[in-house]
Amino acid sequence: MIHCEKHNHCISTAIKQGEEICNEKGLKFTAIRRKVLELVWETHKPAKAYDILEKLAKEDGAPVPPTVYRALDFLLQNGLVHRINSLNAFVGCSHPGLHNQCFFMICTHCEKVTECCTTELGKAIDITTKENSFTRESVSLEILGACQSCSA
Amino acid sequence: MIHCEKHNHCISTAIKQGEEICNEKGLKFTAIRRKVLELVWETHKPAKAYDILEKLAKEDGAPVPPTVYRALDFLLQNGLVHRINSLNAFVGCSHPGLHNQCFFMICTHCEKVTECCTTELGKAIDITTKENSFTRESVSLEILGACQSCSA
DNA sequence: AATTTAAATGATATAATATAACATAACTTT
DNA sequence: AAAGTTATGTTATATTATATCATTTAAATT
Ligand SMILES: [Zn+2]
Ligand SMILES: [Zn+2]
Ligand SMILES: [Zn+2]
Ligand SMILES: [Zn+2]
Figure 1 (cartoon, helix red, strand yellow):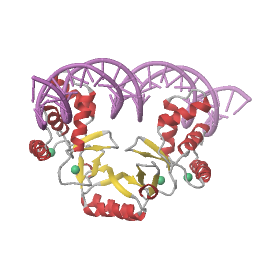
Figure 2 (cartoon, chains in turn cyan, brown, red, green; figure 1 turned 180 degrees about the horizontal axis):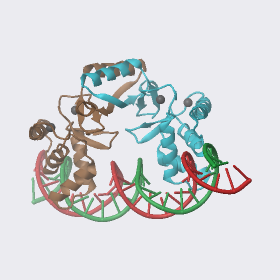
Figure 3 (tube, protein in one colour; figure 1 turned 90 degrees about the vertical axis):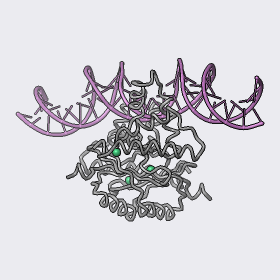
Figure 4 (cartoon, protein in one colour; figure 1 turned 90 degrees about the horizontal axis):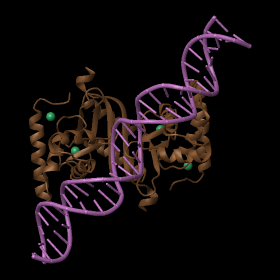
């Protein structure tokens, strides 16, 4: 499951939220940044930087890696995309602006990534860090497995 | 904090456990595998594959990347080391054979990695996956922050 | 409006991480 | 010993990411 039922809606919502967040923060939602966000959102599969680069090339002449990585860094900084560390890939954030800790369930069959921000899980992480006198700065939680459709 | 108080003990224990686990499973704890495990355990900091390669080169002639990656893959497969996805690096497992789900607290100041296998946290993850009808295959949980020494 | 400053992009090169593919050696099993 | 399997050697290349400096564009200041 790479797309969802109404995936055009996912894309348009993501772009609209990108615009809004940039406006609020006084940042520039430039053409490149918008285009990269669209390409990340092309599916619910994590997108590889160099795949984005290729797609960009089909439209925009001859982009180079820094172009893509700069845009991705900007989108990461502003919570519009997430990096999936176990895959070296990027997914659009499904609720930018809202989240502080996001966790990911990654289907190894259809590759769809589902974001979840369960408070319970966040609490459990906080408890563990406290027990270890550890001061949390950021969390990367990636659960690999089979989604409902793929395990049925 | 790269080393602990009695770090020689950490190393010798890790090697002994490597031997034991390989014996139990009928696997070969070859010279390269042993050496790479020792180098991973040189500190409690995550070790980079190419740093291991360099250290190996100082002793063993002219090793090449596949040599190191093969040894690391073997050690990963058999639970003797863990990969820290957010750092592209490897740490020795502090309780090989025992763990099923291991979580990591990584100090961004001294770089020490602490492994924790809190049952509570594992349960919280299981609950979340069930709620999402997701079948867990593996989990990568990496908490970045400041350890006790570094946040004091 | 012209000048200065800052932010973003272009462009080239290279660093860092990881694997493919095939040859040889060592060790096991028959 | 022969055959099969596992491990290692070797060369090349794929993949992911960043450093650096030049240029352009947009914003702020005068
Ligand atoms: Zn969708
Ligand atoms: Zn999010
Ligand atoms: Zn130690
Ligand atoms: Zn472990």
